[in-house]
Image 1 (cartoon, rainbow, N blue to C red):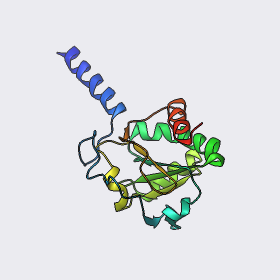
Image 2 (image 1 turned 90 degrees about the vertical axis):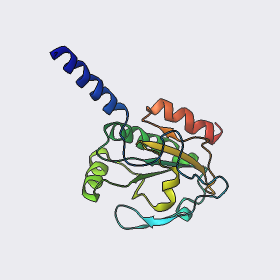
Image 3 (image 1 turned 60 degrees about the vertical axis):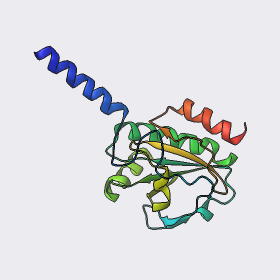
Length: 172
């Protein structure tokens, strides 16, 4: 009996490490994803500064990463995303980190502890069609807001995995 309980606990922990599940739609398909409309939004970053699609004018690729502070895999990949942003922003990469249920104090603490330098903001309603039931979820847009990702990238990725995706969109 103790072995069975231990196995169940191990499996539950492994599952939790690979998938953080907030409320939402089927993980394989974003809810009512607009097929032809370009992304357009206005909101505020975590510090209260206005952010809009116009803020990313001149970007070739915009990486929208939906995450939460309570999600271990999300937190685990943020440092790599920050390194990618530093490495490729001069080639046209922009990154938006969006959260929905984490508190601002938790988010600010994560930004400070990880040294994040890209745009972090609460998710606005225009991001929600790209959300899945899982975080992290990431989608890519061109500089005009047109969707580049055919499907959302669900789950955390390493620096090398994200680099390969980003380079494919940058045309490197």
